[in-house]
Length: 379
Image (cartoon, rainbow, N blue to C red; front, side, top):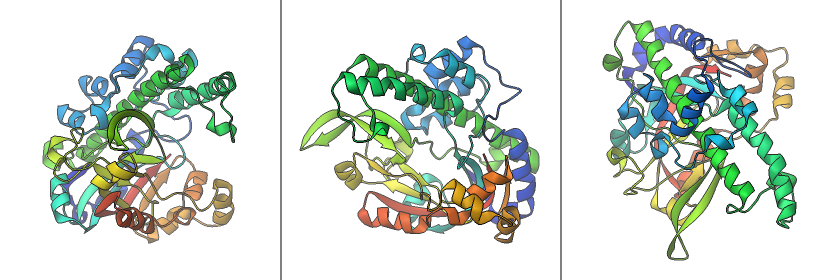
C-alpha cells in the first residue's frame, strides 16, 4: 500500500501506528478475530469470491480489486473440495496475520532506481508505505496437509517415482490432481479476502492515529500478488503458445510490460513485484520484464530466504533483547511472542539487497524502489 504521507509525517507516530495495528489485526499462531465469525455459507462464499466478497462487505473498494492478481478471485476454486476441518479452522481467522515471517510493516521509500516505473506505481522518495504478508491461514494449511496424504497415494497409483516424498504429486487431469487444484484455488481466494480485510484495518488504524480520512491519507493498494500457488497460464513454449500449469513456491509472478493481465495503469512499466527482506534492513519493489516471460514463465523470487533455522536463531538470540536492538535501528516492532522476534531477527535472513541485485542483473525483474522499515507487527 502507498500513502501521501512522508517519513517525517510519521516518525513521531510510529509507535502509535504499530500499537494500533497490533490491536486491530490479530497475529500469530492460531490467532482469531472475535468480531468476524463466519457461518458455513458465508465462508463458502469467501472461498468462491475471494477479495470480491471482502469488498462487497465493506472491506475495501473497486479500485482495490483492479490491483490484485487475477482481480482477487480464482475461477477454478471449488468450495466443495475443502474439508469440514479446513472450514472449521478458517471460520474466524479472516483478517489475521499468520505466524513466523508473516507481517504488516510500515516503511518509507528510501531510494528510487527507476523514476518512470516508480511514477507509474505511484511511488515517490520518502513516501510512507505499508506491506502486508500473510496468506490462507489454518484453512490453507489444512488443505495442504490433507492433500499431501492423498498425493502420496496418487503418486503410487500413477507409477510416479518420487525422489523425495515432499515432491508427491498427481496428474492435473486425474481426480486427485483436479480436486487438489480446486481446493488450492479456494484457499487462495481465502488469502485474497484475508489480505483485503487487513488492508481495511490498516486504513482504519491510520485514520484513528492521524484523525484524518482515508482519502486525505491516500492509502491505496499498489498491488497484491501471490507467492505459493499453481496457476494455469498461457506461455510460449518452444515458440508455441500453450496453456501450462506454473507452480510458484516461494516465487512470485513478474509479468512483462504490455501483458493483458497487468493492470492497465501499470501496463507500460510491467507488473509490480515485491521482494520483502527482514524487519531490520529493507524490502524492494521491482517490475516484471519480457525476459521473465521468456525464461522463467513470468516469475521471480519472493524473498530473501533464511540463513539460520528457527532453532538456531532462538539460540543466537538468547540473552538479547531483539525489540531494543530493533529500536536502536529506528524500527518499532510488536509480535505475538518474544520467540517470534528471535526467530525473525535480521541476521536470520540473507541480505535482500544482494538477492534483488541478482534478479535485476539476470533481467527477470528490474529494480524500482527500496523500502526501509519504520515499524512492524509480526506473527
